Amino acid sequence: MKVAQTLVTLAARTRLPSELAIISNNNATNHGVAVSHATIQPVWVRITHWINALAVVLMVMSGWQVYNASPIFPALTFPPAITLGGWLGGALLWHFAVMWLLVANFLVYLGLNFASGRFTRKLLPLSIKSLTSDVVAALRGKLTHGDLSRYNAIQKLAYLVVIADIALLVLSGLAVWKSVQFPLLRALMGGYDNARVVHFVAMSVLVTFFFVHVVMVALVPRSLLLMIRGR
Ligand code: HEM
Image (cartoon, rainbow, N blue to C red):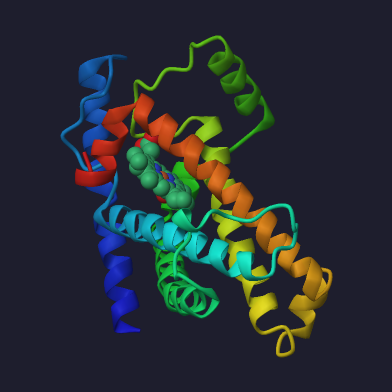
């Protein structure tokens, strides 16, 4: 309880000064690329983001090894070089160990985002109108990244989708792992066999996000700096 309170205080503290500095900075640069000396990504976002990235990679690679032991689609198996664990037992050990890290870290990320109000500020609102205009701008090559303290509508959608996708991965994984103990969850996933398909499809969405995300970051390298040092 005390740890949670400390984390919430930390989240609240990292919010206001950075926002004020960003506002004054944007005024100073007057529509130019915002080269800010303020913290744009609070330390807890950076820490949870990188733990999440590591956990997701380990979960996906060990998951592929588990999948290979009993493929849902027999024509599709994953090359051993991109799997983790060596064999079914080893992969399950990785999968069951890292899932605690993934879930705990995900809950801290979500909890602090909601408690500090950052979730609403950074990822909402998201409207069809803003999305359409940003997609049109992107297709015309005119979507600017001048102000790195804000996400455009496409980023907001991508981040909201991947957050929901990770939640679905955890729930469908739980339905497969503890199918007997969670009959309602199993039923919601359409039964045990379907829960495996849901888990696989959610993994595919996550892997697709990963590659698009990394390409987008490579196109705007300063955003990577923000996610490492905060400004
Ligand atoms: C599958 C693994 C990953 C997931 C699920 C993921 C997810 C996310 C999410 C949800 C955000 C928004 C965070 C927020 O503001 O609350 C974000 C931002 C970001 N991520 Fe990732 N990420 C992953 C891997 C990576 C990797 C490998 C890199 C580096 C190459 C990276 C670089 C970044 C950067 C630079 C931002 C900030 C973007 C910006 O300010 O425009 N991420 N990521």
